[in-house]
Length: 326
Image (cartoon, rainbow, N blue to C red; front, side, top):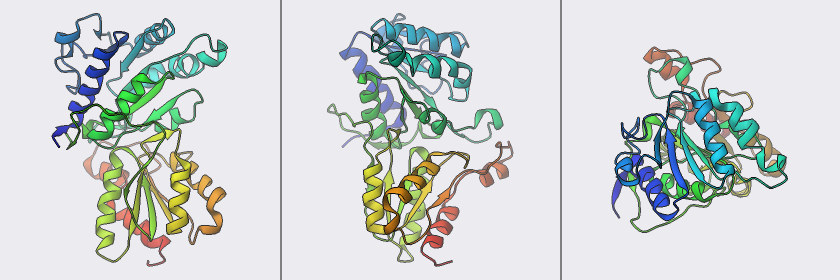
Protein backbone atom coordinates (compact mmCIF):
# COMPACT_ATOMS: atom_id res chain seq x y z
CA UNK A 1 0.00 0.00 0.00
CA UNK A 2 1.25 3.51 -0.76
CA UNK A 3 2.56 5.79 2.00
CA UNK A 4 1.59 9.49 2.06
CA UNK A 5 1.74 12.41 4.48
CA UNK A 6 -1.05 13.45 6.83
CA UNK A 7 -1.47 16.73 4.88
CA UNK A 8 -1.70 14.80 1.62
CA UNK A 9 -4.39 12.54 3.06
CA UNK A 10 -6.43 15.59 4.06
CA UNK A 11 -5.93 17.15 0.62
CA UNK A 12 -7.12 13.97 -1.08
CA UNK A 13 -10.21 13.86 1.12
CA UNK A 14 -11.06 17.49 0.38
CA UNK A 15 -10.41 17.18 -3.35
CA UNK A 16 -12.32 13.93 -3.77
CA UNK A 17 -15.36 15.33 -1.96
CA UNK A 18 -15.25 18.56 -3.97
CA UNK A 19 -15.13 16.57 -7.21
CA UNK A 20 -18.00 14.39 -5.97
CA UNK A 21 -20.25 17.23 -4.78
CA UNK A 22 -20.22 20.75 -6.31
CA UNK A 23 -21.78 22.10 -3.11
CA UNK A 24 -18.58 21.48 -1.14
CA UNK A 25 -16.17 24.41 -0.89
CA UNK A 26 -13.14 25.37 1.23
CA UNK A 27 -12.77 28.75 2.93
CA UNK A 28 -10.21 30.16 5.33
CA UNK A 29 -7.04 32.17 5.78
CA UNK A 30 -4.35 31.48 3.14
CA UNK A 31 -6.12 28.38 1.75
CA UNK A 32 -5.99 29.58 -1.87
CA UNK A 33 -3.14 31.77 -3.17
CA UNK A 34 -0.67 30.57 -0.53
CA UNK A 35 -1.73 26.90 -0.94
CA UNK A 36 -2.64 26.64 2.74
CA UNK A 37 -0.72 27.63 5.86
CA UNK A 38 0.35 23.98 6.20
CA UNK A 39 0.06 23.17 2.47
CA UNK A 40 -3.04 21.03 2.98
CA UNK A 41 -4.83 22.80 0.11
CA UNK A 42 -1.82 22.94 -2.22
CA UNK A 43 -2.95 22.98 -5.85
CA UNK A 44 -6.65 23.10 -5.04
CA UNK A 45 -7.13 26.69 -6.21
CA UNK A 46 -5.85 25.70 -9.65
CA UNK A 47 -8.27 22.79 -9.89
CA UNK A 48 -11.41 24.24 -8.33
CA UNK A 49 -11.09 27.99 -8.81
CA UNK A 50 -11.55 31.00 -6.57
CA UNK A 51 -15.29 30.43 -6.05
CA UNK A 52 -14.66 27.10 -4.27
CA UNK A 53 -11.26 27.68 -2.64
CA UNK A 54 -11.70 31.04 -0.95
CA UNK A 55 -9.15 33.19 0.86
CA UNK A 56 -10.53 35.24 3.73
CA UNK A 57 -9.42 38.18 5.84
CA UNK A 58 -8.16 37.47 9.37
CA UNK A 59 -11.73 37.44 10.68
CA UNK A 60 -12.70 34.04 12.07
CA UNK A 61 -16.04 35.28 13.42
CA UNK A 62 -16.93 36.63 9.99
CA UNK A 63 -16.03 33.71 7.77
CA UNK A 64 -17.39 31.15 10.26
CA UNK A 65 -20.70 33.00 10.07
CA UNK A 66 -20.59 33.12 6.27
CA UNK A 67 -20.01 29.36 6.27
CA UNK A 68 -22.99 28.75 8.53
CA UNK A 69 -25.21 30.86 6.29
CA UNK A 70 -23.98 28.91 3.27
CA UNK A 71 -24.75 25.62 5.00
CA UNK A 72 -28.26 26.85 5.83
CA UNK A 73 -28.68 27.57 2.11
CA UNK A 74 -27.78 24.02 1.06
CA UNK A 75 -24.01 24.21 0.53
CA UNK A 76 -21.40 22.12 2.38
CA UNK A 77 -18.65 24.46 3.58
CA UNK A 78 -15.30 23.36 4.98
CA UNK A 79 -14.04 26.21 7.16
CA UNK A 80 -10.32 26.09 7.93
CA UNK A 81 -8.94 27.78 11.03
CA UNK A 82 -5.20 28.36 10.96
CA UNK A 83 -5.35 27.03 14.52
CA UNK A 84 -8.26 26.23 16.81
CA UNK A 85 -6.78 28.75 19.22
CA UNK A 86 -8.17 31.32 16.76
CA UNK A 87 -11.57 29.62 16.75
CA UNK A 88 -12.26 31.28 20.10
CA UNK A 89 -12.94 34.46 18.11
CA UNK A 90 -15.66 32.53 16.25
CA UNK A 91 -16.97 30.44 19.13
CA UNK A 92 -20.24 32.39 19.35
CA UNK A 93 -21.05 31.45 15.75
CA UNK A 94 -20.00 27.82 16.26
CA UNK A 95 -21.83 27.25 19.55
CA UNK A 96 -24.83 29.56 19.24
CA UNK A 97 -25.54 29.18 15.53
CA UNK A 98 -23.97 26.06 13.96
CA UNK A 99 -24.63 23.71 16.88
CA UNK A 100 -28.14 24.95 17.68
CA UNK A 101 -29.69 25.96 14.37
CA UNK A 102 -31.27 22.59 13.55
CA UNK A 103 -33.00 22.42 16.94
CA UNK A 104 -33.97 26.10 17.04
CA UNK A 105 -35.48 25.93 13.55
CA UNK A 106 -37.45 22.78 14.27
CA UNK A 107 -35.43 20.88 11.70
CA UNK A 108 -35.94 23.43 8.91
CA UNK A 109 -32.25 24.27 8.65
CA UNK A 110 -29.49 21.68 8.67
CA UNK A 111 -25.87 22.71 9.06
CA UNK A 112 -23.82 20.25 6.97
CA UNK A 113 -20.37 21.77 7.44
CA UNK A 114 -16.89 21.11 8.80
CA UNK A 115 -14.69 23.37 10.90
CA UNK A 116 -11.13 22.03 10.65
CA UNK A 117 -7.56 22.96 11.57
CA UNK A 118 -4.78 22.17 14.06
CA UNK A 119 -5.35 21.91 17.80
CA UNK A 120 -3.08 21.74 20.83
CA UNK A 121 0.58 22.55 21.25
CA UNK A 122 3.16 22.56 18.48
CA UNK A 123 6.43 23.51 20.15
CA UNK A 124 7.40 26.99 21.28
CA UNK A 125 4.21 28.86 20.41
CA UNK A 126 3.42 30.36 23.81
CA UNK A 127 0.35 30.25 26.02
CA UNK A 128 -2.16 31.69 23.53
CA UNK A 129 -1.32 29.32 20.65
CA UNK A 130 -0.88 26.00 22.45
CA UNK A 131 -4.32 25.07 23.76
CA UNK A 132 -6.42 21.98 23.15
CA UNK A 133 -10.17 22.60 22.96
CA UNK A 134 -11.53 19.16 22.10
CA UNK A 135 -13.39 18.93 25.41
CA UNK A 136 -14.84 22.45 25.00
CA UNK A 137 -16.50 21.59 21.71
CA UNK A 138 -17.41 18.06 22.81
CA UNK A 139 -19.44 19.65 25.61
CA UNK A 140 -21.83 21.12 23.03
CA UNK A 141 -24.94 19.21 21.86
CA UNK A 142 -25.35 19.52 18.11
CA UNK A 143 -21.66 19.22 17.28
CA UNK A 144 -19.59 16.17 16.38
CA UNK A 145 -15.90 16.29 17.29
CA UNK A 146 -13.34 14.25 15.36
CA UNK A 147 -9.63 13.92 16.23
CA UNK A 148 -7.69 11.68 13.80
CA UNK A 149 -4.37 10.12 14.82
CA UNK A 150 -2.76 9.18 11.48
CA UNK A 151 -3.06 9.75 7.71
CA UNK A 152 -5.42 6.79 7.19
CA UNK A 153 -7.85 8.15 9.76
CA UNK A 154 -7.43 11.72 8.53
CA UNK A 155 -8.69 10.87 5.05
CA UNK A 156 -11.46 8.45 5.96
CA UNK A 157 -12.84 10.57 8.77
CA UNK A 158 -12.67 13.87 6.87
CA UNK A 159 -14.62 12.39 3.97
CA UNK A 160 -17.26 11.16 6.43
CA UNK A 161 -17.31 14.55 8.15
CA UNK A 162 -17.90 16.40 4.87
CA UNK A 163 -20.80 14.08 4.01
CA UNK A 164 -22.33 14.36 7.50
CA UNK A 165 -25.47 16.44 7.81
CA UNK A 166 -24.43 17.88 11.18
CA UNK A 167 -21.66 20.40 11.94
CA UNK A 168 -18.36 18.61 12.59
CA UNK A 169 -15.33 19.96 14.44
CA UNK A 170 -12.32 18.27 12.83
CA UNK A 171 -9.16 18.74 14.90
CA UNK A 172 -5.68 18.01 13.55
CA UNK A 173 -2.15 18.92 14.72
CA UNK A 174 0.63 21.04 13.24
CA UNK A 175 3.06 18.36 14.40
CA UNK A 176 1.28 15.66 12.41
CA UNK A 177 1.04 17.22 8.94
CA UNK A 178 4.35 15.64 7.92
CA UNK A 179 3.58 12.24 9.49
CA UNK A 180 3.50 9.41 6.97
CA UNK A 181 1.23 6.38 6.88
CA UNK A 182 -0.43 3.86 4.64
CA UNK A 183 -3.51 5.15 2.83
CA UNK A 184 -5.43 3.09 0.23
CA UNK A 185 -5.78 4.50 -3.26
CA UNK A 186 -9.39 3.33 -3.50
CA UNK A 187 -12.15 5.30 -1.79
CA UNK A 188 -13.02 4.49 1.80
CA UNK A 189 -14.90 6.09 4.70
CA UNK A 190 -14.42 5.74 8.45
CA UNK A 191 -17.59 5.87 10.53
CA UNK A 192 -17.78 8.76 12.96
CA UNK A 193 -18.25 7.54 16.51
CA UNK A 194 -16.39 4.22 16.26
CA UNK A 195 -13.16 3.71 18.21
CA UNK A 196 -10.26 1.61 16.95
CA UNK A 197 -8.33 -1.05 18.85
CA UNK A 198 -4.73 -0.24 17.92
CA UNK A 199 -3.26 -3.15 19.87
CA UNK A 200 -4.79 -6.04 21.79
CA UNK A 201 -3.67 -6.50 25.41
CA UNK A 202 -4.58 -8.15 28.67
CA UNK A 203 -3.28 -6.11 31.63
CA UNK A 204 -4.45 -2.51 31.18
CA UNK A 205 -6.48 -0.44 28.72
CA UNK A 206 -4.65 2.63 27.41
CA UNK A 207 -7.04 5.17 25.84
CA UNK A 208 -6.02 8.20 23.78
CA UNK A 209 -6.71 10.13 20.57
CA UNK A 210 -5.02 12.52 18.15
CA UNK A 211 -1.29 13.13 18.21
CA UNK A 212 -0.91 12.07 21.87
CA UNK A 213 -1.83 8.54 20.84
CA UNK A 214 1.81 8.21 19.76
CA UNK A 215 2.86 8.80 23.37
CA UNK A 216 0.58 6.00 24.56
CA UNK A 217 1.94 3.63 21.89
CA UNK A 218 5.55 4.42 22.81
CA UNK A 219 4.81 3.82 26.49
CA UNK A 220 3.11 0.49 25.71
CA UNK A 221 6.19 -0.65 23.77
CA UNK A 222 8.42 0.06 26.77
CA UNK A 223 5.99 -1.62 29.18
CA UNK A 224 5.92 -4.72 26.98
CA UNK A 225 9.63 -5.16 27.70
CA UNK A 226 8.68 -5.55 31.37
CA UNK A 227 5.93 -8.05 30.65
CA UNK A 228 3.00 -5.61 30.92
CA UNK A 229 0.47 -6.07 28.11
CA UNK A 230 -1.41 -2.88 27.15
CA UNK A 231 -4.56 -2.79 25.06
CA UNK A 232 -4.56 0.52 23.17
CA UNK A 233 -7.83 2.19 22.18
CA UNK A 234 -7.85 5.14 19.75
CA UNK A 235 -11.10 7.05 20.29
CA UNK A 236 -11.00 8.80 16.89
CA UNK A 237 -14.03 10.89 17.91
CA UNK A 238 -14.76 12.53 21.25
CA UNK A 239 -18.37 13.35 20.41
CA UNK A 240 -19.87 10.85 20.02
CA UNK A 241 -17.69 8.59 22.18
CA UNK A 242 -17.64 4.86 21.58
CA UNK A 243 -18.36 3.90 25.20
CA UNK A 244 -19.07 0.21 24.45
CA UNK A 245 -15.57 -0.28 23.05
CA UNK A 246 -14.05 1.12 26.25
CA UNK A 247 -16.31 -0.86 28.56
CA UNK A 248 -15.61 -4.15 26.79
CA UNK A 249 -11.88 -3.52 26.93
CA UNK A 250 -11.94 -2.69 30.65
CA UNK A 251 -13.97 -5.82 31.34
CA UNK A 252 -11.05 -7.74 29.87
CA UNK A 253 -8.09 -5.82 31.36
CA UNK A 254 -9.69 -4.57 34.61
CA UNK A 255 -7.65 -1.34 34.50
CA UNK A 256 -7.67 1.89 32.48
CA UNK A 257 -5.29 4.79 31.91
CA UNK A 258 -6.36 7.74 29.71
CA UNK A 259 -3.75 9.88 27.98
CA UNK A 260 -4.90 13.29 26.75
CA UNK A 261 -3.47 16.66 25.76
CA UNK A 262 -5.83 18.81 27.80
CA UNK A 263 -6.04 20.51 31.14
CA UNK A 264 -7.27 18.03 33.75
CA UNK A 265 -10.48 19.72 34.92
CA UNK A 266 -13.59 18.67 32.96
CA UNK A 267 -11.55 16.95 30.26
CA UNK A 268 -12.47 14.03 27.99
CA UNK A 269 -10.56 11.78 30.38
CA UNK A 270 -12.81 12.97 33.23
CA UNK A 271 -15.85 11.83 31.25
CA UNK A 272 -14.27 8.47 30.40
CA UNK A 273 -13.35 7.83 34.04
CA UNK A 274 -16.93 8.58 35.09
CA UNK A 275 -18.51 6.31 32.47
CA UNK A 276 -16.16 3.40 33.16
CA UNK A 277 -16.78 3.49 36.90
CA UNK A 278 -20.52 3.78 36.20
CA UNK A 279 -20.73 0.93 33.70
CA UNK A 280 -17.83 -1.34 34.69
CA UNK A 281 -17.19 -0.66 38.37
CA UNK A 282 -17.28 -4.33 39.37
CA UNK A 283 -14.58 -5.12 36.79
CA UNK A 284 -12.07 -2.50 37.97
CA UNK A 285 -9.10 -3.72 40.00
CA UNK A 286 -7.69 -0.21 40.41
CA UNK A 287 -8.87 3.39 40.11
CA UNK A 288 -8.83 4.88 36.62
CA UNK A 289 -5.74 7.04 36.12
CA UNK A 290 -5.41 10.05 33.83
CA UNK A 291 -2.30 11.52 32.22
CA UNK A 292 -3.04 15.09 31.06
CA UNK A 293 -1.20 18.34 30.55
CA UNK A 294 -0.21 20.32 33.63
CA UNK A 295 -2.92 22.60 35.03
CA UNK A 296 -1.32 25.84 33.88
CA UNK A 297 -0.97 27.95 30.72
CA UNK A 298 1.91 26.66 28.60
CA UNK A 299 5.15 28.63 28.78
CA UNK A 300 7.47 29.37 25.87
CA UNK A 301 10.71 27.77 27.06
CA UNK A 302 11.45 24.24 25.74
CA UNK A 303 11.87 22.94 29.30
CA UNK A 304 8.39 24.21 30.17
CA UNK A 305 6.89 22.62 27.05
CA UNK A 306 8.48 19.29 28.01
CA UNK A 307 7.21 19.52 31.59
CA UNK A 308 3.71 20.53 30.47
CA UNK A 309 2.86 17.75 28.02
CA UNK A 310 2.06 14.08 28.66
CA UNK A 311 5.09 11.91 27.94
CA UNK A 312 5.90 8.21 27.87
CA UNK A 313 7.45 8.19 31.32
CA UNK A 314 4.34 9.66 32.93
CA UNK A 315 2.20 7.07 31.13
CA UNK A 316 4.49 4.26 32.26
CA UNK A 317 4.26 5.46 35.86
CA UNK A 318 0.45 5.63 35.64
CA UNK A 319 0.24 2.10 34.22
CA UNK A 320 2.54 0.72 36.91
CA UNK A 321 0.40 2.49 39.50
CA UNK A 322 -2.80 0.72 38.40
CA UNK A 323 -0.79 -2.52 38.22
CA UNK A 324 0.45 -1.88 41.79
CA UNK A 325 4.05 -2.17 40.64
CA UNK A 326 5.32 1.21 41.84
